[in-house]
Length: 133
Image 1 (cartoon, rainbow, N blue to C red):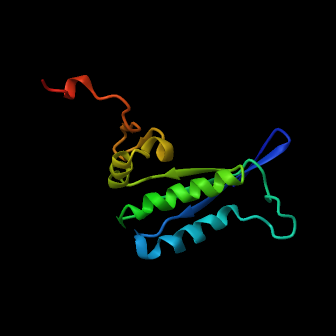
Image 2 (tube, rainbow, N blue to C red):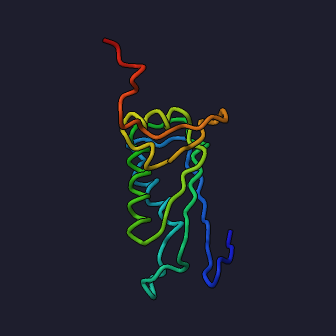
């Protein structure tokens, strides 16, 4: 999808994650998913600036913490090129795992849990109502 913004073009590329992402296929998934923001070999410059790579996580049903490593690596590669990533439709279990590792806010911001409610990033301060004396 391409849209004009001022004098610059904005391209939103998308890639659908496979059903299973585990340690055994994590490197392959990173390499395949990185292709959405590949650089032309001839110039060494990105084909289009202000690109957001959209990644659909809705098909991910079987995964381990390697999926978080994949998402973080994609984010790192995109930022190194001055680009950004947007991860959409993360499974609830992935959101919970990301929160456990403290990276939910970085990867998903206020992502939806799929039931219409907002899923906040990790808490930085303990909830006073959860502390018992």
